[in-house]
Image (cartoon, rainbow, N blue to C red):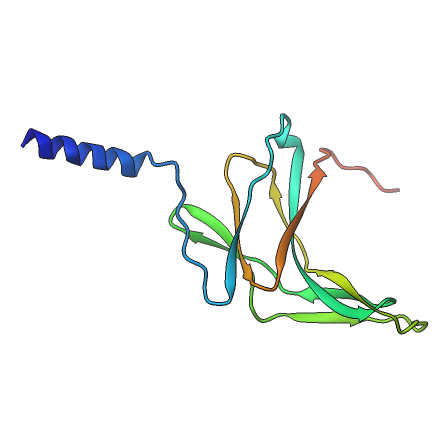
Length: 146
């Protein structure tokens, strides 16, 4: 009986104090991306912007924007972001095009989070896309405009 009691306590301890975060599996056609930020001494002074990117063949004078937003979801006590498989790419053209084709990276509107290196940021994205991020220094205070 003591053995069963001890085994139960070990099992309960492992469940309660496990450091691993659990997330759902990726849907068909999607991949899971974990973004681990490096440790930073002044994490409170920074924010991070996450972008969904895709490469698109277009003329050299064109610019483009992707219409696909991240949706923040939760699974248990863990939060993650999921992109839609239904997206649209808006291409803006200049009147004076050279007609030269090239591959360009197209971005969506970013999602901004506080910088933290303790846990991973988890994204579920379509397999033909990627996640990129950039750091922003959080300047406190507002500037008055005259």
